[in-house]
Image 1 (tube, helix red, strand yellow):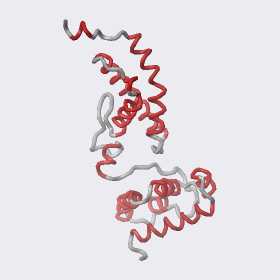
Image 2 (cartoon, rainbow, N blue to C red; image 1 turned 120 degrees about the vertical axis):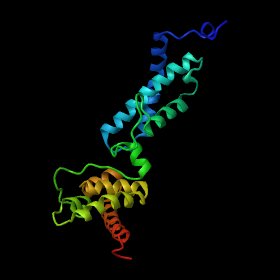
Image 3 (tube, rainbow, N blue to C red; image 1 turned 135 degrees about the vertical axis):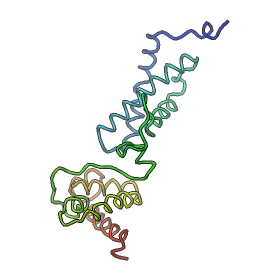
Image 4 (cartoon, rainbow, N blue to C red; image 1 turned 90 degrees about the vertical axis):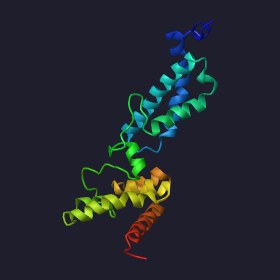
Length: 204
């Protein structure tokens, strides 16, 4: 008896019903897995990509006589990991595209959006460096290289706080967001400023 007769292809109804059972687990895992992605649009895209990849793999697995419902956590993790590294359902991210996650991971840099207007928050180095007309083009170019390198040296929480400070978020909002006191946020602002200056050799 052929493999096709021994393992007939599951019906569309069975595939749809079975995948719907797994879908909440996949979505929940993806939301947790991508919780550190700051851009809501990119985070939603990654979650959607995870669902798409999971569906394709689910169909293949059932056709091969395997049921992902027997290992849902591993299945959801693998799908999210696949989307995380830039492997898409239709095409992979280009390592030459500065906006792609693959390029940013491979070449160790980050891309972030600047506010449309100056917030007036003291110590907003990203805005000051890029918007100040007194900053020369070479200095701006150096900043675009040095800033991601400096961020990569920080612990994850401090890196996120530093990025939020650079985006202009105030002390009170940061304290609420990271569940810290306003005094601690102010202290971190000074510490990060000092670390940035040491990174450039301005102070020892």
